Length: 184
Image (cartoon, rainbow, N blue to C red; front, side, top):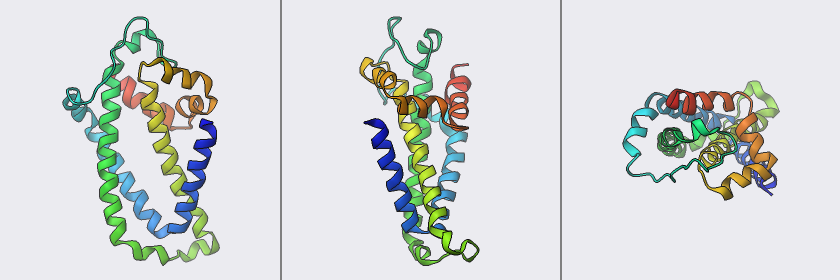
């Protein structure tokens, strides 16, 4: 079921990007990239400030998380707050980017000549990559929550398990960014 839902989201993302066109999609990607860089630079400072406002379930010695051993589990709240802070910054940047895209909507009808008839394919792929990254963020944050029902989801769903643990490049990068750099 989760695999089907992810597939539908990715197909819808491809369609949305293809309709948008590469010119407008590049504005969106550049805004996302800028927001990403701002988030990487500032997420740890924000993580310390949101601990009082964002709830996190306490982890006990009996808690079993699919992707994390007991040593990491007891300090996983720090990584959770770091991930939430990162996504908050990224979301704020996404809102600004969407506002800019509203004003740049005329780019929707500009086709890049060097792409000839493949303009829509490039735009669709770019948007699909952005949506996949957001799906990864969603599952990664869920993987840090010590609730048995959520952890069972990762045990039973090979799609969710693959996205968190085996996504090319991003799995290792965000594990280092949120787990290794924050917990140690």
